[in-house]
Length: 306
Image (cartoon, rainbow, N blue to C red; front, side, top):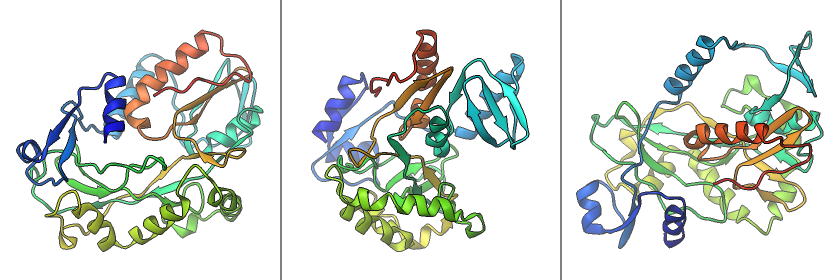
């Protein structure tokens, strides 16, 4: 907790350490042991709504958005769509998420990285809106780049539990086996011997604690440590899974825990955009644009940006 407080202060956040009595006043349903961190400016918003708003701005300013247009190949100055159409581009920005490493490799960038995805599962509760008023988070294990199961309030006042950090078996492993990609599953599985030998993370502990969270009662039990009134019977609606585009560094056998942006010929690649990627999206976008204007060159690696 002290480390997180130091990070918050260093990054200019409004944050304070509170005791159990103060916590009870701020969020009566939450529980802690002695102390907690309070971030009064933390808020929730709608990713869908924000994205739609940004899309409208792009269109209003003469931009074009292509849906259902898979990029099958790319290189300096061009992008191939669906294997049949080649589009000329001045500068390509690769923000392909789960496929960011693959796109970067077409440009000879980030060859020391591979994507090692993790699946996040959520359960929604039937509590009346407004029952829980604050987000409640655990203290994370700083050896691993995951926050742990937390209890959060959605933009419409509902309460959800999650996410997990379960290994995904292919890049878009959202739970539909009809979308299974054997080649990707093999590539991901081949990374685990290296990952298991990593000295940077508690991998056995991670796997031991995460796989049981496939069971709803186990995930709820984790949440009860934060909000004791959470009950299995109240959280029966399964949310849409999310897949974390987590970058793995082959030489060091390390999960990258910060944003990584690298430059190539006529291209900039957002290779790692892990949590809080959504929170930081606009700031990261500003950084990428400034980097391009400053003339980031091939092979130049970004400094870490918190």
